[in-house]
Image (cartoon, rainbow over all chains, first blue to last red; front, side, top):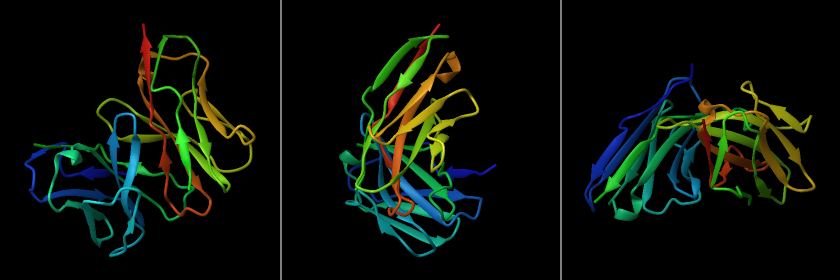
Length: 113
Length: 114
């Protein structure tokens, strides 16, 4: 079974803190994605990566950065957390072609106070 | 660019009743279409997908969806729901020139009551 794991299920941080969210997949997938999920808005793509050290902006990259130093690991970084970044963050991975499904992790619920 | 509209944010239904979750999309290019399901406290799982060929696609647990190009819709149906179908359902689209990027709808929460 494909497994995508995320470092934390729940996280509480203070405004202005630097936050790291980690994602690891075990199926040698080329593509990895970070989404945020908000009620009524569905999932919105923050960043994705199609190879090691490669990254592309999604629909809402402002306030976020990413790092992919190894194929299996994709990190999302909030340089200075703000309350409007309180959300559920989902990581996903897939093979190269769009016809392959995206596999999702369980999510990290981040609260910024 | 693509966009997806799920017309109902919540759908309450009694067990063993039929259900339809509506999804409409807009795109200037040909698309691939997907339905994902999110059970409580879990990540999303692929339910079914349309890539090409037959416009009617089915899942292993009795759901089906039909791609209607003229109406730009991809509605999800099940003739008889179970309590275990209670979940949030997301419709997603990818344009053929959009690489691996998916655009998701806002989600529909299906609530099956005994």
